[in-house]
Image 1 (cartoon, rainbow over the protein chains, first blue to last red):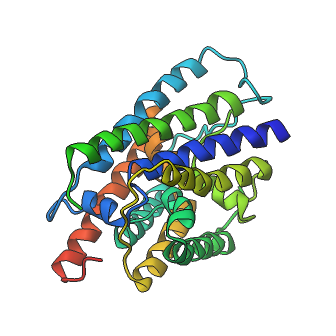
Image 2 (image 1 turned 180 degrees about the horizontal axis):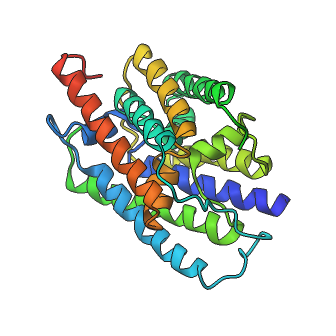
Image 3 (image 1 turned 90 degrees about the horizontal axis):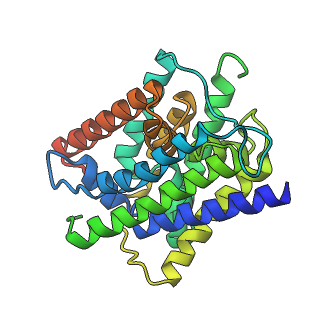
Length: 140
Length: 143
């Protein structure tokens, strides 16, 4: 368990460093990507491209593995249906992303770089998560 | 923000780091590097278990960003005002949980797996984000 936590800490570190290196921790950069009718900034598309390549390889490697290298089994989503929850959730998420220029990863990374605005956003985000937990109809 | 050759090169490099971290989460721990799900677990706002892994990953995010700053990565940032941060944060937290994922879980991990759910979610939140910024621009209140 300690080994798994150390691996997760290292993964979080590399992930957070990648967000900072790519300047995705800068809300103005993200809003620039979404501002296609204004001063469009394509940087985010290249970040996605850079991330999708190693991750595509990882999914291929995973098909050859019975279990992960440092855990008992794979714990990945298996749901396939497109439902209203998925679409409405993405609409609400996208609206918040456009307004603030932040999503969960960059906001948490920003706690180290710009603590005050990041803490405001992360607190509101935790409230949104808590609100979902209070309102959701069934446990799952 | 204006894009430049250096912002694109750093974007590709940072993106590759993000993808490698997500790949390591999958191949070593069997887990999806979906930040909204891991954050909900770390904050004890989720029913799913393995909280220690989630807490460790969430602590790693600011730690890694701080290391990148120490290493001299450019750290330019401009934040919107507090009302935008509060409203945006509330929507991002609620929407990511309702839609079962965010930019990392759906956008990186799901799209690279060609998951139909993630492809739809990513298309929808990108379109909504673009429309939101366009609407704010139209109203003259781009953050």
